[in-house]
Amino acid sequence: MYEALGKKLQGNVAVKVHSGEKGNQNYLHPEFMKPMVEHVKGTIVECNTAYEGERNTTQKHQKLMETHGWSKYFNVDIMDAEKNDKVLEIPNGKVIKKNYVGKNIEHYDSMLVLSHFKGHPMGGYGGALKQLSIGIASSEGKSWIHSAGVTKDQTILWENIAKQAQFLEAMADSASSVVNYFQGNIAYINVMCNMSVDCDCCSVAEDPCMKDIGILASTDPVAIDQACIDLVKKSEDEGKVHFLERVESRHGTHTIDVAEELGVGTKEYELIEI
Image 1: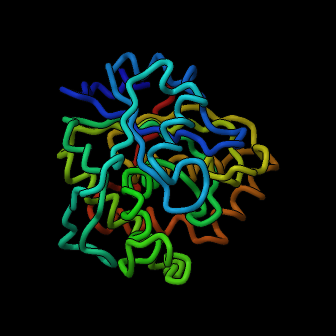
Image 2 (image 1 turned 90 degrees about the horizontal axis):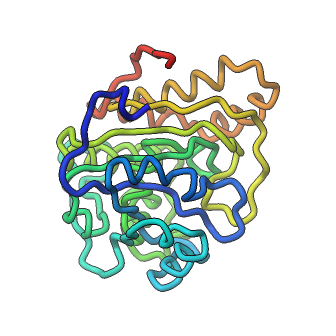
C-alpha cells in the first residue's frame, strides 16, 4: 500500500504509532508493523500522555515500550522525553495559535503516520488526524489541545476541558501545524482492523464491534480519514451502528471538516482498490 503511493520518504524517517496503553487488547502490535517500519528504515516515535496511566512519564512510557515489544524490534524515541518542547506556530488556527510538540521532532526529515483506525471516547474516532495532533503533541501540548489553549498544566487540565467543538477544532489546528512542518515529506497509512469504539489509550476497552475492513494509504490525512468513515458507513456489518454512534455522538467528523477548511487536505478522493 505504501509503494502504491509512489512516494519515497527521505532522510531520517519518524514512524508515528500508538504504543497502546497497558491492559489494552486492541492496539496493533509491533510484529504487525515490523515490515513497514523496516521498509522505510524508520524510528518509532511517541509522546507522553496528559492523563494518569503507564505512559504519562518518560520512564513509565519507555518501560511500556519494552513490555509491548516496540523496543525489541525498533529504535524508539519518546520525543518529549526531555522538556523544552518545540513550538509550531499556527497563524491561521481557529482555536489555538501554537502547538507544543516533542522537541525531538527536529531529528526527522520525514514522517510515516501509521494509524490504527478505531473509535475514541473523546474525539469520536482515531485516525491520521488524531495521530498528527494529540499523538505528536507533547504531554503539555496535549493539555493545551484538550483545554483549547487554556493550560499546559496536566494537574489542572480536567478543570479546564474545552467544549467539544473547540477541542475538535484545536485538534485540526495542531494537525495542520505538523503537516506544514514536514512540507510534504509525510505519508499516511490507516489500518482498519480491531475496530472498537474505544481508543488504544484505554486500559479497559470494548472489544471490536466490526469486522476488519482493510488498509488505506494516502498522502492526504483528510482524505484518508474521510475514506475510512465512508467505508464504515457503506459496510454491511451490523456493528457499524454502534461504531457510528460513538463517532456521531462526539461530532468526530468535525475535525475532518475543520482540517479541510485549514487547507490540510480535501475530503474529495478516489478510492483505488488493490
